[in-house]
Image 1 (spheres, rainbow, N blue to C red):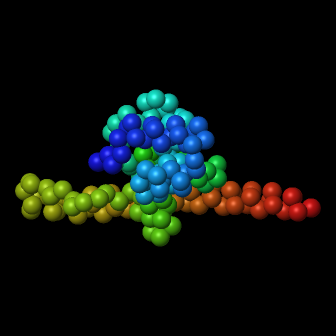
Image 2: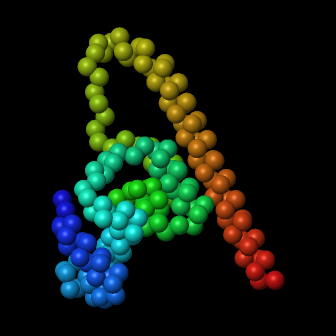
Image 3: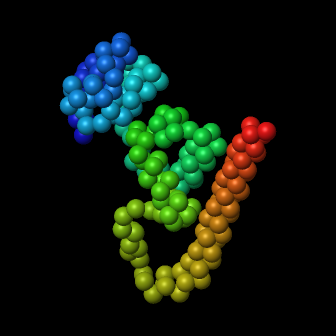
Length: 174
């Protein structure tokens, strides 16, 4: 649901860009809950121009690989949530923040978890049970192996970035 019309958004952005006030003042003036909302609108306007506020259908489901790629890019480039959301065309920066929290709390596997209730199979249960026990164990181990490889790769990149940052800090001190 869109709380503010496209005309209102454009009016606020143009007023801000023309020096008509700061984000805090404009947020109060137009009854916008947060000044960061205005900053998001300004960044969208700068990136997309007049089409910035056309209704774009947000991608409802992002796969785990994409989420991991976004977090890696953000860490590698030391980008803010807002910069990252603009770069990857993600509608709200808070989406990335929730991915980051999930990753920090539960590891890579949390990024790959499916939401909602699992789909129930409507087939012969007895036939499936014997066959699925062997294959599901193998699939489970393969999936776990793949996730551990991804997590390992991510941690290596993160360690390299931290080391690089520490090296530049040391060289600046000398």
